[in-house]
Image (cartoon, rainbow, N blue to C red):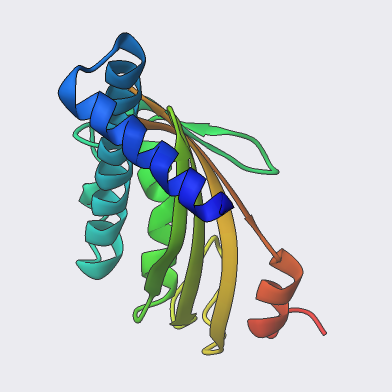
Length: 169
């Protein structure tokens, strides 16, 4: 019975939004469009970065000029610094494989659940190649502004990452 009521209510909302959109319906539709556009912009930029191994995918088309990556050792602000920071994953892992598991968004905030795999066969953040394989998952908090990435902060198990690289026991 609850399912029928819920389905009926959902149908009623959809019909009312499709026939005579109210201000609330219009606002909800515009908010959904904005979220969908933010996700597409975000995902496309990172897909190009990893799939094409193209650090120039980090540019003002998809990233704010003052884009910031929040790190434990201090924030890095600006396109060039942001690009240089993330380029470590391309130079450190010639076979870097990055996958989006899920993206959840509301307004200008996105939460990305991801997985990264690769063989550490190059210098990454000053760490010489260990030739060890890594497989880590994490999340990234993302703030968008005017349809562009403004800020990112990554969260993952760094201890596990360093153990997989053979740098910790």
